[in-house]
Length: 221
Length: 395
Ligand SMILES: Nc1ncnc2c1ncn2[C@@H]1O[C@H](COP(=O)(O)OP(=O)(O)OP(=O)(O)O)[C@@H](O)[C@H]1O
Ligand SMILES: [Mg+2]
Image 1 (cartoon, each protein chain N blue to C red):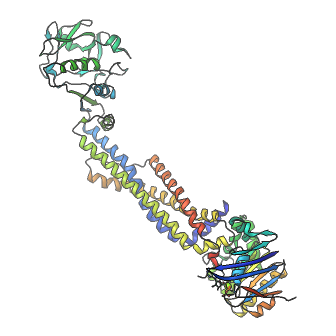
Image 2: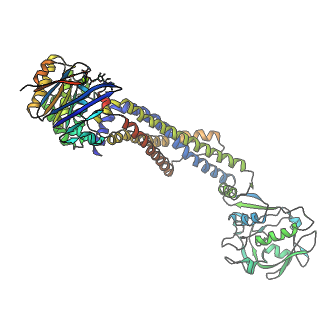
Image 3: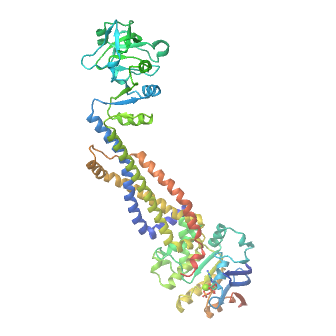
């Protein structure tokens, strides 16, 4: 469903990605690993239509994304992808519920529908009773669960997670990983960047980047 | 549309603090702007009321007319114009059978006239009180060139002094030549108080003066119009109308009128400047808001918001701030109007009451909307520059 063809990403003569090709099928749980600066986030951002490659193509469900305009890409980000980041990017002054609702507001859903979806998502991550709290008052682990709720509320097919446990202790990191595994079990495609080798082993496929190049691609059944 | 409102209501909770300060400042400046603009009308209004009170009998002014064109133009210029007195009446005589009309008290004649060629349906203000005694009155639209050209209407006192009846002819003469310059038919005799001694066509009178000017007995012709306004306040508009017509009215109030006019324009200028300042302040609200919320905007885009949605969201803050501060400013203007009037009244001889004019409010409001519309274009570019990637770049 995601077809990456000969991607290059250049920053002022420096190549963050060099000729990366990769196909991810629906339902896979991909762990992206590699040293710091190896290009993991860059690749994830390009997949998620947040960034554009200097060369090469990303084909999603048969559609070449470079042919899309900004609004079409925005639509794709809103409907197809759920994003999770190391630093959560929650609005601390918004309630947890409001944070989760944002992509749904953007989608133009009606308030009642929005609320149902958001509450369901919060229930999935076990944060239903904190829905009314301000996001800024949550603990780190709770914040990341709220971010996951936001990522999954709109029922996207693909979850892109960039070091989702990077800011969390082992216990909380484990909770997040389990949530991602559960989502994958429920049929979502998950692509997760991680430094944690244990977490990486939880995935069904492990891709390693080195200096912007794809150096290994293993499947764990 | 609905999602803009939803986002707006959510987002206002995080940005209202900076908004409120700006909105308060903006409303204060708006108050100034609105009050001064309204005041610019009220100063005129106050001055007019003052004129009416001070000069309850109306006001007259003098108009120096230098050419025949001017003469005709001035004659037709306005209803409030009449020839009241000739300042060199000594030079002209009206005589009948050799009897010269002379007014022992003043040596002045009041000569009213109608339009240059055609009498108007309305009499000049100052001879409205006239009643026909004998003969005929002019009829509306009498073409003077054709049948009324040599007609003159005289007051019953003048007729008595001359011993003349309607239908008889009198001579208008020039003392130095002693020759009759023109013969006029007395078309009608009227009576009334303060209605002047003669009424005759302006064109004709000027004709007399032209022929006088052509003699060796005078250096030139100076014709003074004495305009009169029944309501003293009309002088204000009359003066502007005459000036627009290229005339310089001579009037003791002129300096004062100019001063009041200057005050009006100063008020309007300050009002406009403060209005622009407000629009600048409001613009800053959004600039600051957008700058402060750059990451959030990038995040909205990352989560799939189109640029237009984000632009609409933050533009609605500008709109909201404008509406809020304009409403607040209007309300404050109403509250502070006595205060403003007070300040003005200590510096002026007359009393000014500040009113709120809906038309002024509307005009300022629409100006604001136009300024905001222009802003929208610049604003869209700013929002466009913020990319989803900005959300995930290192802090
Ligand atoms: N905007 C940018 N300008 C210049 N260089 C950049 C930019 N973004 C990323 N890079 C460089 O590209 C390379 C890859 O960056 P990327 O963020 O993808 O690494 P990463 O594998 O995610 O590293 P980390 O594990 O530390 O998050 C790095 O060397 C980084 O410095
Ligand atoms: Mg990274």
